Amino acid sequence: MTNSTVISAPSEYGVMPTEFFDAYLFDLDGTIYLGSELLPGAKRLIETLRERGSKTVFLSNNPTRDPEMYIAKLTKLGIPVRREEIINTVVTTVLWLKQNHPNAAVFPIAEEPLINALKDAGIRISDDPTEIDIVIASYDRGFTYAKLQTAFDAIWQHGRAQLITTNPDRYCPFPGGRGEPDAAGIVAAIEATTGAKCIANMGKPDRTMIDTVLREIGISADRTIMVGDRLETDVRMAVNAGMASALVLTGDSQLSDVAVCAPENRPTFILEAIDSLIPDSQ
Image (cartoon, rainbow, N blue to C red; front, side):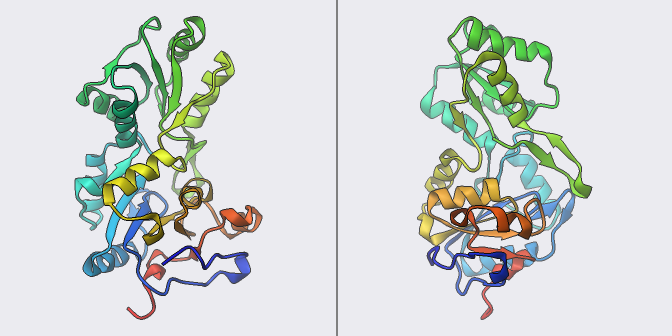
C-alpha cells in the first residue's frame, strides 16, 4: 500500500485503509493511551495486527522514560511488548552519539532515564565547560540557571561545544488540557543566550528517529504507516519519509488543525478510533 489516498480536506474525513500494512509505527500518549488509561480500540487493533503478522513498533519523543518503563506500562494496560518494539528518544540519542561522536564528552540537561542510558552505553558525561563537546537539551523538570550557565560556558565562552536535542516538542500534554514545557524551551534558552543553533534532533519528525526505526524493522517506508495524534511530529515525520500516516483524534491535533495545515502535510487517514485502521473485510 502506498501513500496515494491523501485526505485533501476534513470534509473527506472517513476514508479508511482497504488492506493491511506490513508494519505499524505507533505514537504512545494520546494515541495508544492517554495518561494512565488505554484508549478505545487500541488493544483490539494491536492484537489483530499481531495475529496477521504485521510488525508493531511504539515510538515516543518523551526522554523521561526508558524502554523498560514503557514495557511495564503497556503490559499493565494489557498490551505486552518486547524490548525491540520500543524506540524513544533515549534510544535514538544514545545510538546517534555512539555512531557519530563515540568519544565525545556530553553535558545532558536531562532527567534520570537518559542520564542512566548514557552511562550504561559508556558515553562520557562531564559538567566541565572546558571539556564538553556536546550539550544535550532535553525535557528536564530540574532545569536550573546553573545548568544554563554550564551550557553557556561550554558553547559560548569556550566555543567548543555543539547543541543537540532529544525532541523538538514545545510542551508535553496531559489529560484535561494541562501540559508542561518540554525540551524546545530549554533549546530556546540556550540558543538565545549563546547564539548557537541546535544541530540535531533525535525525535520526531527528524530523520534520525525514522531511519533508526526502519533499519530496526527491515521494512521499507512504502509498506509502513505512522499512527499518531500530532500533525507537527507524527504526521510530519511520515510525510518526510514518504510514508502513509494516520492521525487519530484522541490526543493533540484535531480536524480544525488539519483544515489549516499545508495540503502536503495532511495525514493519509483521519481516525476517531484507532481500530478504524482494521480494514472492513476483517
